[in-house]
Image (cartoon, rainbow over the protein chains, first blue to last red):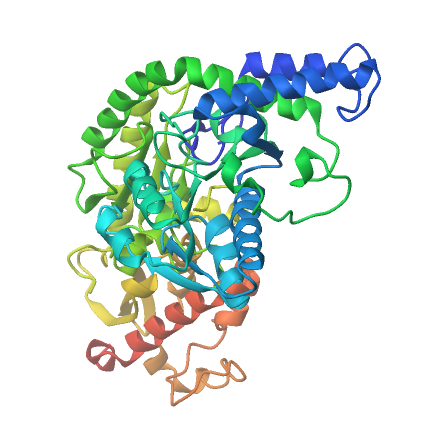
Length: 395
Length: 154
C-alpha cells in the first residue's frame, strides 16, 4: 500500500517498543545518561551497573526467579543455544564424556531444533516428541521418553506458529522426578502468560525483549542456581555475567528488557482480557469461509494468536493479496526446499493445508475495527483466490 | 513463518496479480479448443489452461491456477500473449525450434513460434531462478492443452 502502512497483525514476529520502555532506554544513553561500562569500578560504571541490576531484578520478577539466576544475552536464540549446548556439554563433561540423552519436540523453533541437532552430531541421542493434531504434547509422551541418562528436556511454552500453550508444569514435575533438567523456550509466552519457574519446575528458560514491547537484541537466560555450574559458556573473553556470557553489557538494551518485563508483568492480565475477545472476533469472522481450519488449540492458545489454514488458497498468494495487512504465512514459497511449515506438517496437516496458513497475532494497538478490517480483507481475498483456483474443477 | 517483506515481487507482477484478468472460464459463445492441466496442489502448483480458437488463431485463453503469486501472474501474462497467436495445428511449420535447448525430457509437442519458453518467460517477467519450476508447470499445462482431445479438432 502506498502512502499508508499496513495494519500490523504480526506481533508474534516482533512488537514495537513501548514508549515508556524507549524513554528509559534513551535516558541511559548520551552524555547525561549512564553510559559507563557496567564492569568499571568508578562512578560511571557503578551507575550503569545499578541499572543493569535493577533490570535483572525486573526480569527475575517476571519469572518468579532469583535475580542472580538471570543472565543477559542478545535474545532468545542465543539463550536457547547457551542453555541447550552449554548445559548438555557441561553435563556430559561432568559425566566423564559419555553421550547423553536429550528430549525435544518436532514443533520447536529453529533456535531449539538446530542446537539439538548439533548435539546429535556431537554424539548425543535425541528423542523427538510428536504432538497431537492440536499441538499438545502429553505428559505421558514425555514420561515415556525419559530415562536414567536423560540430561535435558527442551520444550517450548507457547508455539510461535500456532500459539498452542503446553502444560509446562506437568513437564517440570516429570523432569524433577527423573532428574532431568527442563529447558523452556518462552520467547512467545514471556510477558504474555504467567510464568513461575519454581512452581513450574523450570531449570533453564529463554526469553527475548522484542516479543513483549522491548528492544530487539536483548534477551535473557534463566538458569536455576543448582544447574548453573553445569552450563558451559559458548564464548570466552572477560568472564562477564558470572562467566556464562562474556562481553560488555549494553546497558540501554538491558534497561529496555527490564522495563519491558516490569510493564508486561503489570499489564499481563489486562492484555489477556483484551486480546482474547479480539481473537475470538477474528475467528468468528473467518470460520465460515470455505476451507477455513484453525491450527492449534481453541482453549490452550496464546490470547492474541490465531493460525488459520484456508484450504484451496496458497499462503503466499493470500499474503500478497492482502497488502493492507501485515501477517505471516506458513507457505514454503520463500524457502529453498519448498517444504511448507514444518510445525503444521508435524501436527498432521497435509502439504496443501500447511502452505495455505496465515498467522494473525494481535497486540497492544489492535482494535475491534482492525479485526473487522482484517476479516473483510481476508474474506475478499480468499474468495477471489478460490475462484482463480477454479474450485470444483481442480484435483 | 514468512512475512510480506520476503522476496519482494516486481511491480508488474504485483499489478497483474491484483487483477488476473484472464482467470476463469472461456467466454460464453466460444468453445474450448484445448484444455490442459499440470501440477498438483499438494506440490504447491496447479494450472489448467483453456484455449478457444477461430480462423486458425487463439481468440481466448483462460486459466485456473493454485500457487504462488509468480505462477498466477505468469498464467495471466501467458494467456494474454496467447490470444491472437496462431493455433499450432493450423501452422505446423511455425512451431519448430522455439523450445530448442529448453532441456525438457521426452517427446513434447512444440509451442507456437515466437511464444518463447519458460526461460524466456522468466526473463521477461523477472521470475527468479528459484521460482522457475512454476513456469515449467505452466509450460506443461500449455503443452497438455495442445495435446488434449479437444485440440485435435481445434
